[in-house]
Length: 295
Image 1 (tube, rainbow, N blue to C red):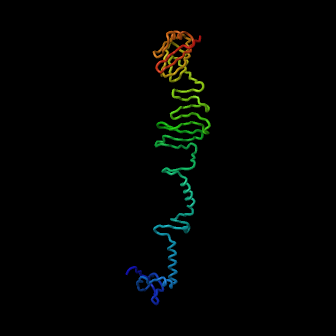
Image 2: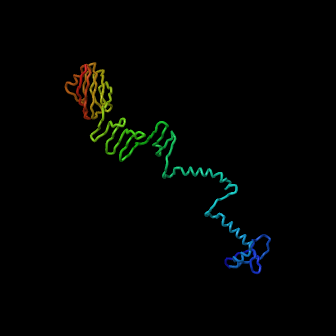
Image 3: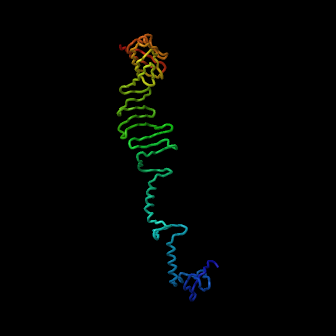
């Protein structure tokens, strides 16, 4: 007999007058209600049973599903406790945590909007070994690279300006000139053939009293020898310049093989006196003339 339910039932004139549950000590016969025996009409006649079923149905409809599901409306807990935790007291913490989490940077990357602010003396490190860092110490800002090269890459131009973009210090153009400015005015610019200088080019005067002149250090020299010496040039590069020779002691001057002079040059400057010497270098040899004599 399919779909049969054992119940405690009372019958009057063949009708179910009440349904009850099994209680210890009851004496009753267990019978089976056939399919279709309990009808809406019969249940309606039993108002007590109907009311109980309505209550059970209402409670069941409002109950949370044990295996999960959708819940609508508010959940009210006695004393606001779940597993001993006061949910109402935790609400402010949860709200604060949610707000903080919503504003946090995504750990795995993503889009960030708005500004970021870092305090003074806080360092932003980049690279596995903290090779690059950025910081501001309250007075100065630093970008420091500790491995390899610090490269600025651009297919256009790299422009160095003040913070207000009002003055330009230098411009580096891709496939073009490099210009250096003074007070927002270009003074040096590279060209296809070399360099263009706007205004006066002031050279460095280096004192070298032994008669050996390092062209990588300067282009203008002053020499006051204390004894005989040989005019020698080292680190020879293509450049020109002058040498102020103060030979008050009349010391004998000779010339290195790479120093090219005419026959009378050495004898003239070996006599006591002050001489302004001019030189020109082609990168291999240095050619000299005596441009002036001061006695």
